[in-house]
Image (tube, rainbow, N blue to C red; front, side, top):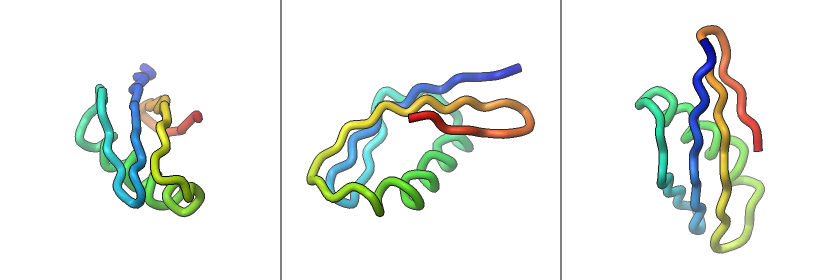
Length: 65
């Protein structure tokens, strides 16, 4: 079974705020790791809003921007 989580993410400088999040604690940890590894190193604006769709299954987790 595939579960889809939708995240509304606001990046303010180096701080990442996740609002309107429907997810589990584990999925939140994964999205945080993903942000720090991939997003925070690429964006240089003061404020960026992103919509993330995380598709999670029993065996794998993938991200779509």
